[in-house]
Image (tube, rainbow, N blue to C red):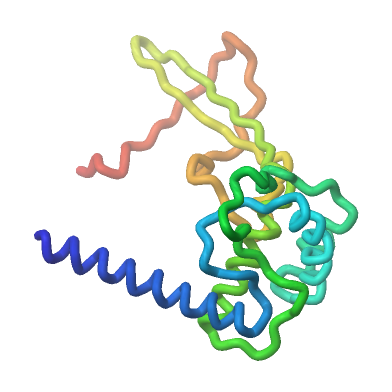
Length: 190
């Protein structure tokens, strides 16, 4: 058992080493900033460059639409905190668009570019409604979610795990009677 845990960690370290190696290659191609950093924050002077970096992504097909949508928008500053920047700021794209890249390089570049757009996009806004129904001595609960503005989640089309299997609930009034239909839990079989 200890060997399998060690083997599992070894695989993680190999993937981390490969990712760092690919990021280093992209740094040498001058399309990513210095990759050997653990910082997740930018200083104010680097933040001043972000609108130009986002504008650059308007010419990068994978993120052109989202980058264009951010043009002229007030950028979210939650990733800007000079006090939390260590030796180097967070990994970001540079002012150079990539040319020919290997599949691994394209994957890493796209991850960094997507994260940059997510970091400076608006918050995801949603309405979550929870309703409790009483039937006899049992209480049933239903949950509904309506996304008002996808915000940062629109970059890669992400959904919140809490949203899985939820939808908007129909209009309900307190004290209203309705028919309840339930389905068994997936673990409950014949």
